[in-house]
Image 1 (cartoon, rainbow, N blue to C red):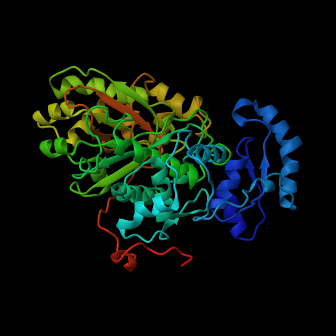
Image 2 (tube, one colour):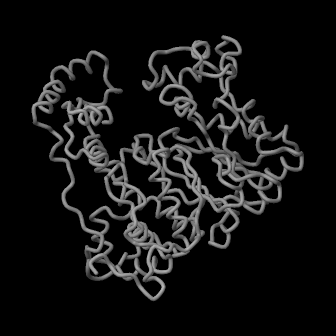
Image 3 (cartoon, rainbow, N blue to C red):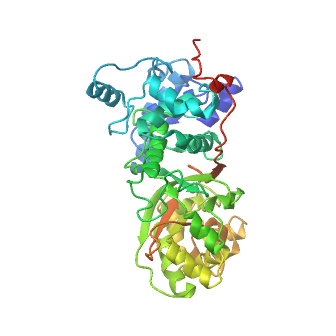
Length: 474
């Protein structure tokens, strides 16, 4: 799509070739990037499930004609553009609570669960004390072209059951979604990774976020409702529904917000995850990336770092699979998995005088797999890396660090990341349990991005001093 847009921007007609099943996503992507109705031509079937001969034959007999039609003005996907949609203050449903729920379900505006009806009064009440202009725009959703307004944040917050004091967190999350570094437009890719927000800072507990037992389970209102808001916002504003952008083959459930144990971090002198991205350890922050899969590392046994590191590293290595194409292939130096350790394990390291950097260095040495397995993930078992080059060849070309070519033995152990700091570590969970959780991230398809949470009331609207703000119609 981006190549076509570059060509169209230069006045050169183009046609984007997409697989069957991706027309809706391609159409929405073009619209989000400012090129509604960009010509498309589909291939026959999925390219990964055909022989080269069949793929070429189908392309010549079918797709070429579709490309020509697109170049001369016909486009099989031109009718896929969305129709008119409600304006911000339109009344879209009336009647009983059951009537409202039925309408929202039919329109695909919910996650399948009942929602709090986002009446104008409820949304205004949610925003009124914040001082924010409801129509202030924080950016544009690159996947849909919709404005990311304070009002739209409030609408989905009411639906998710968030409280007004959560608005600063929601704004910070929206800033991440608007940041091109994060790449929100990739949020519906086929592997189905889902966003994980990591909340850090001294005010997390006061805001109702749970960093203790069940830290990644539904139940705590703040963790659950803010996590649900994120999925609703991606759905309703960014367009990540099955008929538009969400092409997940299976998908992951909505993730609750993971909150770091601030008190434990202060006690042991470790910085939160967000500090790895330049934010102050004393700030309230939210850091987010998209995660593919996770592995529980249960009952970590040992009383010294040297005893527990190999087990933790084994969990990190077992979680890494096709994601390694983000080390080399689909991406370069962009695999950055997360290890969540309980406060009990974190304190074990701290008592031995280990910093977080020490733990990362030890994990880097132990979280390794056989070179031949790594090469299969990035080559033999994937079409995402050109050629079938060996790791030693990639090191010789300067494309990977020397640690990947300490010999040419196919059974040698190589790291799953390029450097120790690529192993993210968070501290959360039951402080009396020795467990950990390793998660593999999706590289640049939701790249780690951190934002500071600003709790200061905004001064956008003078009318907030004396009462409710006027609507745009006034």
